[in-house]
Each structure stands twice: as C-alpha cells, then as structure tokens.
Length: 112
Length: 116
Image (tube, rainbow over all chains, first blue to last red):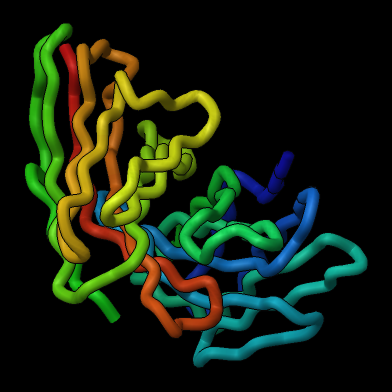
C-alpha cells in the first residue's frame, strides 16, 4: 500500500518562505505531485518530480529525494492568495497518471 | 489543459435517495477519474471510467453504490445510490490528457453533496 505524511497546518506572514514536507511509503514509486486547493475550489496542479532534485516554477519550487522517500514544496514571497490547502500525491509505477494517492493536505495560512 | 464542467455544483439530498453527477470535458479523453473529498479531508479515488468498458473501482468502493457510465470520450456520470449522511462529500471528476507528462490531473469544480 501507500501512505503519505505532511503537516496539517502552517502559518506564515506575507513575504515569508514556507516549506511543506511530504514523506511517503509506496510499493513502487513513480513520481511526486503537488496540488493546491483553495477553499471551495478545485485542486489545481502545481508541480511534479520524478527525478531527484529541485524543480522551480516561479515562486514555487518542489524537491524530491527518492532515496529518502521525501519531498517538499517551497513557497517563496508568500502572498495572501497563497492561503490554501496543499496536497502531495504519488503515483505508483505502472499506474495511470490519474490514479494518485493524496496526502491529507497542509493548510497554509498567510497573515498580513 | 482541459475545461471540466460538473453538474450539480451542490445539492441537498434525503437519506435513501440517489443522485447522478454529470461530468463534461471540452476535449476527448481516454480516462476519467472520480474522486471523493470528505469535509476537510484528502482526495480518495473512487473509480476509473474508460469509454466502452466497465469502470474500475478502488478498494472500498463498489459498483452497486457508485454506478458509473462513460458513454463517450467527453462525458461521464457518477451515481451515488441509496445515500446516507456518510456520503456527504465533494465528488470530483478529473481527467488525464494523452501526451501530458508530469502527473498532471485536471479537476472539475466538484459536486458538493449534503445528505440529511
């Protein structure tokens, strides 16, 4: 089976940097994805890591260490609009892209 | 990208009734996925819907409770049958696009069901 662990909530001020960690256990790991979901909205894709290292997309970066079964999402220059839930998700090797196992989610609260 | 429309966006239902949720995609897709998100919780895959074949259900979900139709490459329905308050959730339709790499799923806005 699969399991993912991420913190339940993180609070930070505008302009700060937040790191959301995700550790996972899977039977056959393929890649780690991150999704953002605003309250009442649909989850939207942020990033995907299949290989070790850092992927940067604007203010958001994602990191993966396959040997440590660990990844993180880094949110820089926090803005109020970044207040949302962030989910890490894994796809097992051989599974279709859409068959993801999601973590419980991290609620990020950005304060003025 | 893909634009996914779901109906209804929300509904209040009585215990024991059934409700069908519709999902329309603006492009042809091979696979469609139905997820459930209980209040304040994570997303759980219910089933994978392929056109022309029966849906594939995940552990804990059965066809009698969540029958799915997939009549063509742009449309699917999920029925929540014989509802109980425990079925109060957001039901999300999602798609993968052929040729897209990176594990990217596109989600509809969801159908928020409250069962009384």
